[in-house]
Amino acid sequence: MSTLLPIIPPDDLLREKEGLSPAAQRAEEEKNRMRRYFEKPEADAHLAPVAAQEPVCLYLETTNRCNLLCTTCPRTYEDLEPEADMPWELFTSLIDQYSNIARVVLHGIGEPMLVKDIAQRVKYLKDRNIYVLFNTNGTLLTEANGRALIEAGLDELRVSLDAAESEVFQMVRGKDFFDKIVANVRNFTRLQRDMDAPRPRVSLWLTGLRETVDQLPNFVRLAYSIGVTEVYLQRLVFFDVPMDEHSLARAESALFEHTTEREEALICEAESVARELGVMFSASGAVDPGESIKMQRSDSPWSLCRRPWSLMYITANGRVLPCCIAPFSMKGYDSFTLGDATQGSLREIWNGAEYQRFREGLLTSAPPPACANCGLRWSL
Image (cartoon, rainbow, N blue to C red; front, side, top):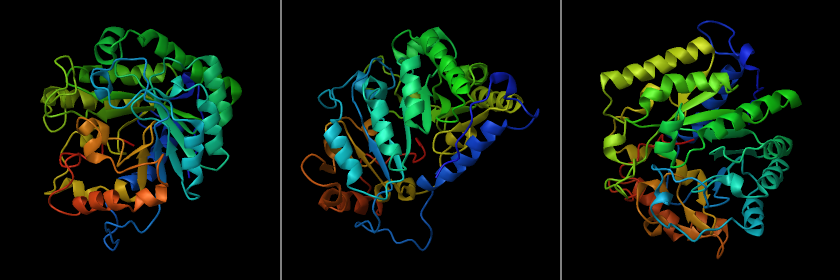
């Protein structure tokens, strides 16, 4: 399903002045293949409240615990569920219920590397030929943990860094771990080279905020300097009413649809730096950075979403949600809970009454509240 990308020493990243490095080019090809998770279904595809196909992707929230206090995350300001790691028995039972799962994402509201057996979970999935990835804040990416992930066969490791300097990092992420994370990632890519390990693909992610957009050009340079060939601009997901006076998950911090000429120039500059260095600079949802901050013109943007027909999201406590954006779209989980995986099978839930009702809403002019303002292409 995926092209495996070699990690190349920084000195070898640049091949042509205006072109992508080989590693970044393969990342671009992989990104384009991933577009199918976000594109509108074919014109002749019949979407109905009852899904005709089984899900091909699972988001499994391995833990909802975290060691940072990000000002863009609802977890910092609200107790969404009791703190828990997904039990191994639940984890394996979810995977074993579907034989055609092609992709599993091991993150949610929490830091996956807090789970001590995360590498074992990756190996369990890789033994079943499943593409595996997760986001991490990078604080626990030690040599031992990194080696375990490499040996387990992890396909993709996304590092949420959000800044190119320590002071800005602390403003967004709540704690001052910037230097430690940068060192961890640099050491990890070096370890991959020493082990001649093409996997996982490593990428750095920055959430697009008015407060941080000026970091972008140096963010690309930073990625290049530590051996990372992929950089992503993540669109901010925010509440209509901020959860806290200190929260940056607010409309006035979002770049979406309201960029100034200066902000657009900074994004263009980052694109130019990426081209010069041979780094792939993209946006979440497999779109270009400039495109990611512009509204997709449609009277009903939610109608483009295919997630409820292709994937399931299960929290650490077994609650089934429609997608990974839902926790960021509304306070609390009750209004978009579609089932309980500890009480029923995924097949029962997948085409159960709640899922059917949810899909039916997406096919109308009155979508579920969690979807009404969704920009669709928020996250891969």
